[in-house]
Image (cartoon, rainbow, N blue to C red; front, side, top):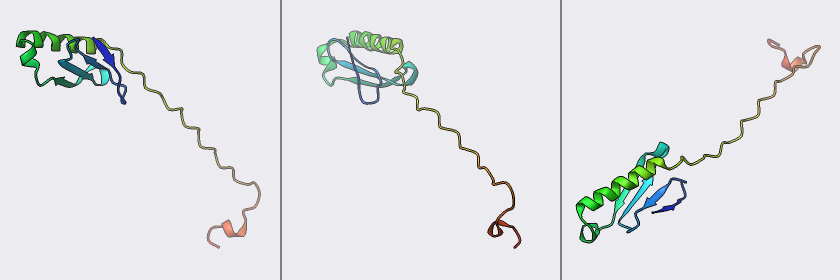
Length: 94
């Protein structure tokens, strides 16, 4: 069984025979399941069910992708009011 990465960094598992592909979502959930159009011609329904179960089990065991954390924002600097008299254009009621 091979693991293939994609642009979203979600795990994608493909069965050895290439009939089933499972894409993981957040927290080890199943996001997408693809079955080849000729799957029932190449295998039995019972074997296909076991393949799907195996992929879903392995997908749940895959480690969660690590997300890159953005750095914390810098705090906004405090405004400092000048000491002393307030300029005429800044007085209220003038």
